Length: 500
Ligand code: GLU
Image (tube, rainbow, N blue to C red; front, side, top):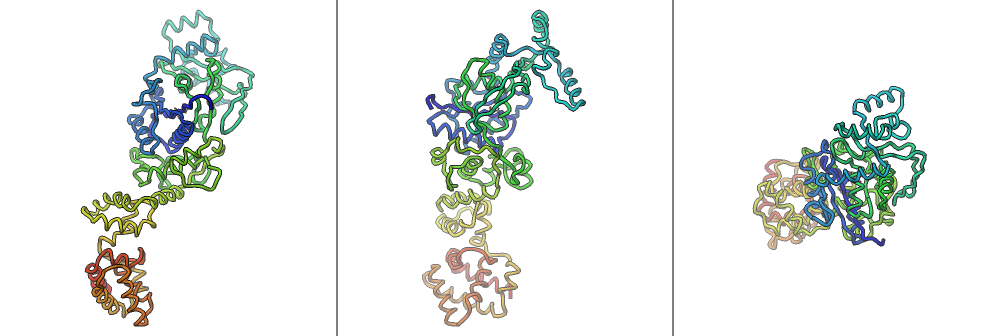
């Protein structure tokens, strides 16, 4: 690569960023970092009707939370600003006029009503109305009207749009870094609007002009933009500019593999589709995902390293990422896999860090001044069963609170007639343990079981039930050590009283 790589993420602020958008940003980021290039954020807000308040801040916050900040863009001015298209409004008109002068575009005066009429008329005949070479001379535009008629209309202030004059009978050879060579017959293309009657450019014009002015070398974007590629290629040619390279990323598919992943799928199946919460939709962040996990699973949606490796931190992704290994076909979204990634990243955090993350949850449970060393120990005992920090409470509540009730099924199975009396002895043994450590307690109780020729299950199962309230949890003697002598004895007493 000879030119310095410059890529851009160019979202329209029309709402929250879908994870597909985050993946597009991520692939741009990885590509830029891999090639020591620049990752730019441009806000494409020329469609005022679709503008949503707060969406721009959301996009920036989401990129920051994911740990893939942009180098240049809004609030990070480089040499190519402004980076919000609405602030570049003045500049696009001249480019539209340039295309008219060179014969690549024309003024069109057709009213919305007249176009609607044509559309309906075609529909009724089972056809689709396409505005292009085959009918443009029959419509209201500067190609069908005389120069005098056209300038008269413009002078009178009759609203117009500027359309691209798509050529007839040409075969375009387009290149996509992921899909390879694509041939397009220009006869199927319509004369897309480049400039609207409200004085704003359309996406197509603004996008091409800005990519050119911002020196973008590679356009990496979602597959949904592939149908625009033919027009974009032609625009570069019409302007006499070198086109950047293009790479269209595969769609992210529903968990069933059929159809594009939508917000509805997330609502239905209970997983987030946004990085951060938006209105009443919960985001990955708020659902308890770590950004490293989100980045890792997104990277593998449509890209693979060519090996079995699944765990990648950001540096490894930058190192390994290659557009050549992006798949052409859609990437199936697997919500279970996202949890698996989160679990992995949770396990790899230190107990110290996890304890800190647990503190706010404990505070909510009115445990406001816990002994940090104890919390770290508890976390070390339970974390392997957790995928999220929010799983911690359910896995560890019995460390803090004596059980209020006991799992019914387990009581039926484990609580025998002689259990209360045996547990009295266990209580006495616990009371006598001098160095109150897990190992010591275990030795004392196990020796007694052996001496009495009892079965281990007969003692250990009801003991767990008493201490935990259920048959779950880590090593029972670790728990006993943690909650302490008096609390263990109290719990035994309480259970005997409640279960008889
Ligand atoms: N503004 C477009 C979008 O919302 C950008 C498409 C492109 O990257 O060219 O996705």
